[in-house]
Length: 344
Image (cartoon, rainbow, N blue to C red; front, side, top):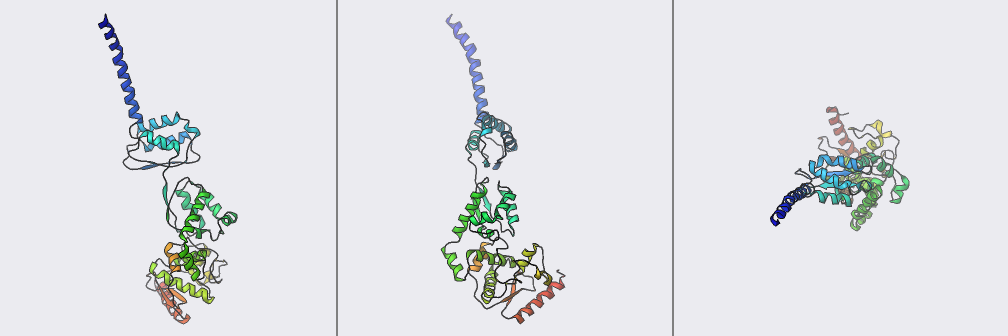
């Protein structure tokens, strides 16, 4: 009798244990194994208009079939639809489903490295930033061209690009426009330390004016070694009350950066950026000045040159002159070289 009872118990116990083991195995398979089969880190981008379903759709190509099924199941059962956190989430090859679930639920996104480009216009800057961040490019452009908003940062729409220092920064992909610009202002203030401000005062310029001049020099040459020489020449012109007569400002005024040869007829364009027509610095930078350009102005070479002209060998460097007659000779050689190459 006792043997029969033991036998009956074993009859039911073995299948129960088997079922339990299967359930445990499935739970482990779905929830405690890796989320993805990828061997490299991928990223999930969640926008502010995403729904739970759209997030699940974005997850599909990033994980294995069972990993996506398990993660989506967990998210559905925790009311994820009503608590979606925007951001850029890294999915590492060794990430488990539960670890990724916790990151998505808690909004533990991964910061990104954002490099500020040396853009020529606000619209181009906005386009690049809008492509790299969640912020819409049209919104960025609108804010940067808003005089009231710029005034809060102590800038104008003409000078706002002087606030951007073209370094690489760690930011969150879903940072809002206000926090982003405040961050750029802090980075600008940190860059303009007491030493740089002191050097700027020594040459009679404010940090914004240094950026304006540096932007012109950046467009004049890509030769870093020559930039301090050009800075010295332009500072000599400013001190003498002469117009800068910088060709890059004409291209900016015309809005045509493809111009290879600035001709006489272009010099009459009506614009405050026309440095042939108006003395002094233009109202704002003609691009986001490079750090090398800024340092070139702050560490300009002291000399007596007032003129420069691109060298006829097209090396990207310039011939400098102290007198107008010598400048005309340099200009004639360069014009001859342009004509020989039929450069219009």
